[in-house]
Length: 467
Image 1 (tube, rainbow, N blue to C red):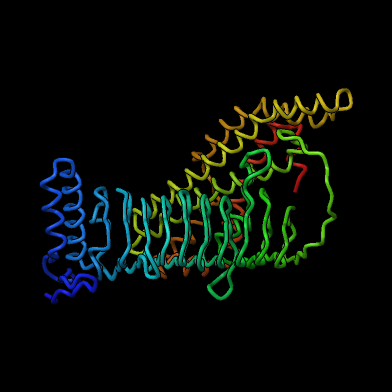
Image 2 (cartoon, rainbow, N blue to C red):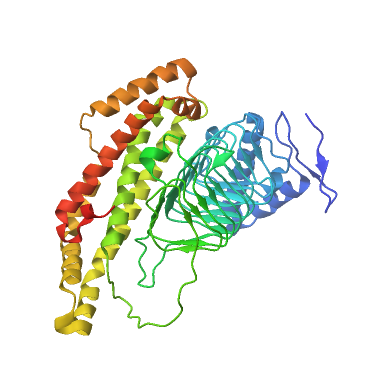
């Protein structure tokens, strides 16, 4: 057993990493005894002792905890879900939640205090400091100092950020890299082939996800799922000191220059977008009034369809890679994140539909007989048909029909797994080009079926006429 170190502030001994039972400092013992004699603090005493017991259990498992007194492990944490293989929990860490899972080689709080609540960390994940809640981090994800990751995020292999990045309902495909001082909620980003050839979001970037009409039907699709999962597409670059006003779609290979605020879709690949100086001025604004909703509804439906396609990818492809680096807790938690993401987007689109009666009333009041009949018909039909659309989207998540294109693609994946093992990146990137194309066709086909059905339900929006 290693000897106890000294607490610099008090000169008293404190516990350090040990291979045997944890040593309690005099301060810890006296504090527990004092609390035990006070009737109102007995519950706190039990909780504190339980926390110390969990820390002792983790140290005995092999977890490195250099300063146990500064770490708090919640009563609901199952220590069996924390690997003892090269895991390091640094001073100031707080870990909570019965679904929390920490895989081998993970490091928590290496640059400052870190709080984890119901997160799942894969092999080699490093959360340097900040707050992390209800999200999944796959192999070798790195989040920098001061991160703020709220529920519903899925960061795949090798995704990373520098300091002070805020995420919520965000999905990053492998290798996607975020700079510093970024707010990037409600979007999915793919593109790139490696850590040296990755999609990038420059520092001081914002994804604008809240409208003046107080709705959040604003998800942006940067890249897409059918091509992005193949890990063979050109990266996307969003220049720093800029922003993206959701909902937008951005094609692979796009480069948006630094300082640009992008408000329109970029559907042609490999384009350089330079922000022109817009004409200033003032126009009348009426809260609650929507003009054209067609693009907003279209982009939301495409985003939802891509999420459903990604869920199918996980169910049919990703589960084949369950291993030490991608174990069942990570797989099932990722599926839960996708379910949450789909539900969130459906709820936000429902909220938009519920605002249509007010908007129609304003149009009629302001325009009278001159009010746009097409605009009114679109808003009325979207509002009236939404329950049918929502029912369809919910059922689309569980489609189990036979798909020969998918099955042939999966045969190739299985063959490469037999040859190369269960390293996800290696297998997917070794698929022949024609096989990758067939996998993209499978996922694109599922998305197209959903788009066509939604278009049939809301014909006045002319969704199929839009790229």
